[in-house]
Length: 480
Image (tube, rainbow, N blue to C red; front, side, top):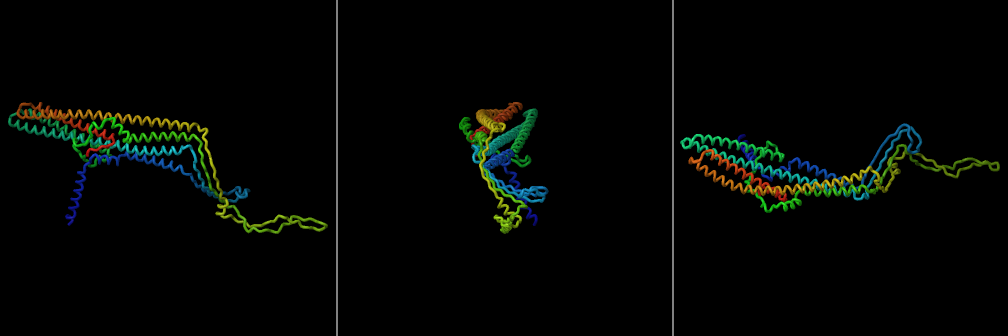
């Protein structure tokens, strides 16, 4: 019973594992994985988020400032009574609360220009993420095509080994029949060893190129990885006539992320210059506050009552004594500690006002800030010019290389046709004993070499066209 249950489970696991092992990586999957896992892209994304945090902070700085302060304290020993201002030795408890607000009314648009510069910086940082993504995509495509080229070289080397092995088997039959000398078989054995060595080298080169591609993808070097290798002649490419360098350059200035990054940075630097200039002029602000305080010794009077007029003296008139009574009424009252919330209410006070801050002498810091912002603007503009120049040079170089590769590819096809005919003719002459082994090997090596050159030229041509398509804004794809 256990076996019946366990067998289907194992079969499902085996099928899943087989499907996983047969899962191949095409260029689109490689690019998407690199974009999702590349550390440089993640770092750029963090920087973009930091720029957005700075922007949000400066946007919030336009709102009024509001601060609440509170304190509670106890005083003992020789102190001044805060209610009667006499010296006392009794201890007392005090508390105070305040709510203060302030808002900048006018600062010559320094803050607004700073916010505008922060917004452009945030856009530049986000565009820089896209730039790094495009750079990674181009690097992935280059490594991917290099791996495909190496795989194709392995296939050519394998064909070469098979051909040499077949010739060796046929030659041994001829040696056994006494038609050709033993030397012919020995020479082909030596050639087979050389071809096998070349095959081992090309396989090692292919393995290294795949490891390099994994490194760009940030993929574990030991993880299963198999490329989906489309035939190079089935990779769709535009006509070279449709990829004129000046046209491609004009489109690159509009589509490439590096152009957007530099454009945002130049505009941000211009706003920073205006913000630095605005900081040199007066700033007008408005402020206000609400406050109150309490003291444990503060007393209040209650049960107020009027007393009889007091006798302040006497006079004798005609021998009769009369009391002198004060005309001012006198009062009596009881006292008690004033309640906490009553003190808060009675001591409540408010203030409001305007302030102006005029920078006069500040050690030249504001002027230096303006000068630095101007120099930073010049630096960003020069970087923009340099990047545009580099972009144009890369496009013209790719176009020139593509033209040269096309010419090499066209010449290579003719060379392969000629070498193939020469090799076929040499093989027939060798089979009937009219050609020695050295000449046969020479023709075979010539064919092998021109095939390799043809593949190199073809892949180089395809890659240069893909680079031009990339700069044109079409991305990189190897399938329709």
